[in-house]
Amino acid sequence: MAASRRIVIAGGTGALGGLSADFLAKRGDVEALALSRSGNAAGDVHGVAADLLSGENLDNALAGADAVIWCAHDRAAHENDAKAMRNLLAACAKAGVQNLVYAGIVGIETSLVSPYYAGKLREEQVIEASGVPHTILRAAQFHDLVLTVLQACDDGSRYLVPHPLKLRPVAIGPVAQQLADLALQPPLGRAPDIAGPEDRELADFARIFCRVTGSAKSVFETSEIPSRWASLQTLTHGPAERAGPTFEKWLRQRQED
Image (cartoon, rainbow, N blue to C red; front, side, top):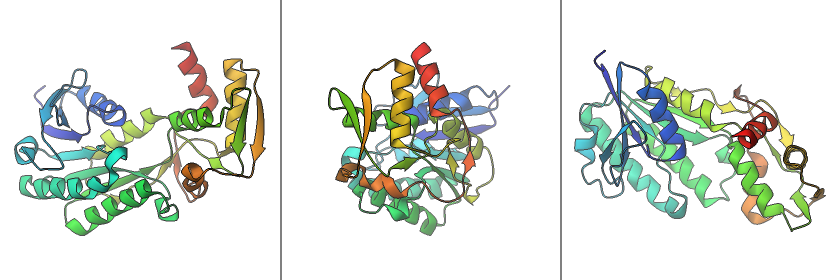
């Protein structure tokens, strides 16, 4: 079957973008292209080279694109993301892209103390003001982030976890699938938020981690919340579609793999 739609995934060589590209590549009627500075392929998905920050080769990369998925976030240089987004939006407008699908974060208006979250909100605002047809999908934190936080809470003999710190993490796969699906649909503006199936305190996730991995470490709660995690406190709120496995089921599968 000849491809009838071309979809470009900005950040298509990353974890989230790569999975979205894989889902699209399985369809016979879609040509998926992974956009990155290197132009490297993402598995079976062909790559296309362009620089979002400078705009170099961006018009060529988006030529003939029906939709674009944005997963190209740079935590190390978040201040550049709004500029990169403006370049992408200009190229989308020139190419006549019918749907820019943006991967956002649930609840970021409440966590602007974080420069990263503040930058993400600015990106959304730039998109909404651009006039480019778009869909913004906000997702909760991925299960992998729970592991990152727990690693930081490990003092060698125990997990000293901040409380209260409630999360509703989601597996990356369902979010990538949703991004791919949205790219095949007309633009929605704001899509329903997506989160994992359960709301739990970080201490609960720590106990699950110990049980599944066989760790003998104890879990203790502390009211002292490091500034780097403080912004996570307010992200668990509001309605959201629930998707994917629980943290425990995801972790057990990860252990088996």
